[in-house]
Image (cartoon, rainbow, N blue to C red; front, side, top):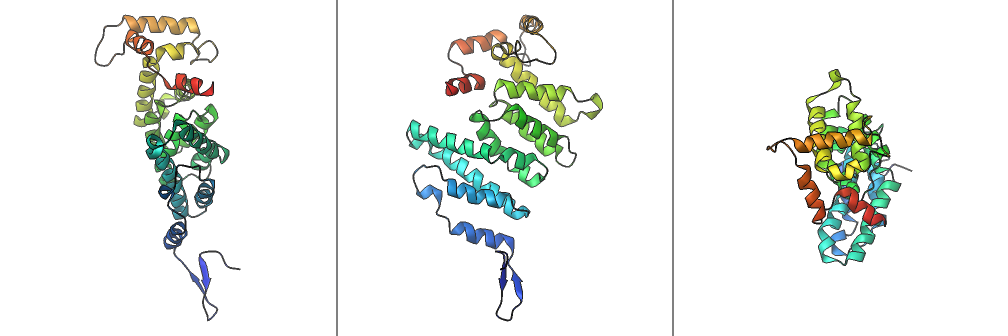
Length: 265
């Protein structure tokens, strides 16, 4: 019995096929998901996951590319299907990613820079579906401390923040603040700037959490005082008006945390 990428010739010698043609051949036998209605393709995802957990980088990249294609297909077809069908497929897809611990596989012990570069689609989708937890943030942050992939991980985080729930955002900020000054880099400082801007812009939502969730050691009274002092500052291109964000909420502006709480209900 030979591995799937090893063939035995007539003279008894073994011939090894290159990984890329083998991957292309396997995927060519799978029906293009765009040819079928919007459904949750568990079999296709399971096959992609087998590729993704391979020990070969080329196979892993092929696997994550197929997972990304399922997410992209879902995003593209959302406007053409009924709301109920879209919600069911999106929920099943998100649950499948969580059940298979996709974030731990990307940022865990077997992480690779090239795989991390392709993970932004998965992270963005899970954030929109409110599936990223503090534990996931811990895993991602641990990988950000490794020198060989720190830059790539930091590059993923600022665009991800706007779609996260309040809890993971505050947790990420607390982890960032635990860094020693000597350990900060250009990427970590940019991340801190993006986090602070987003937290202040979303001030109303985040202040409600400080009673239950510690915010860098500040209690609720202190946070309110800081926000009041921030609101008194003169407006400029680099300052954010709390009144503007509050009025936006009154006119139906919806933050990720509010959207997730409505979905859970």
